Image 1 (cartoon, rainbow, N blue to C red):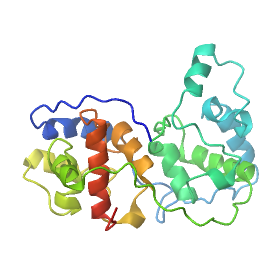
Image 2 (image 1 turned 90 degrees about the vertical axis):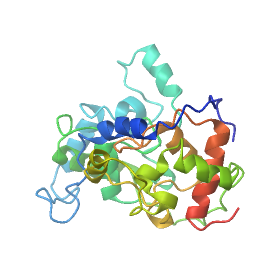
Image 3 (image 1 turned 60 degrees about the vertical axis):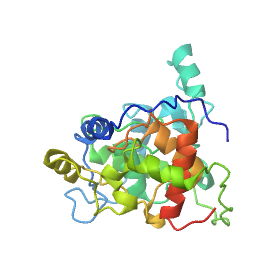
Image 4 (image 1 turned 135 degrees about the horizontal axis):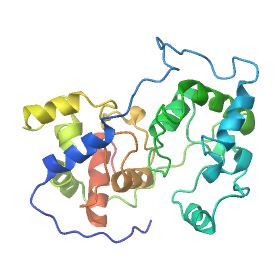
Length: 271
């Protein structure tokens, strides 16, 4: 995989200051979805007659889903009102918006995951968070019913291919980046142990404890959203929408490769 060039000059450790920007980015988001048990709006998608029809109107209307995914989920049918510049920008999106009518090509497996993706944004993509002022919980549930209608049945899972480790660099160097300029240890803990944070101020500790989306446990492979090294590269470069994980603009390509190699050791993988 060829990565765009990044500057590799490292300013003196700015991890505390860098994290504060991520904390501010996540501070206004809510984490619990109405699909989880105990919610005040615990409705199942499609439970009411006409819900999918309402979801279709939202998809092509105020939800603006059709802007990237196409009218009624047909990617080659963008809304007529889009300007040439917007169409050009959509064509350049990396990764491309998924084909919502192709169940086999979709990464999200449950409606809870889909709800979180719509509300909080989609990891390593251009899909941004949609607050309740834009779409209510009922709006999203209606969308889920419509999405279920257009994607059809899910094909049996294929055997997962062997991981591509060609991106990985030097794990020893990656460990140093993790604990220093990468600033990863502040949220994810020393050597990936969430409960073992480096020395930080009481104010920063309080901000971390109040994050609406807790930092991921990098030692729990099953709980991670990134499923391969290419995903992890995107996550580090682009950040995670809806969380305190912001783009790591100070890391160069070689830095990211080394960090990817170190993260593999936290999950117990060998090269």
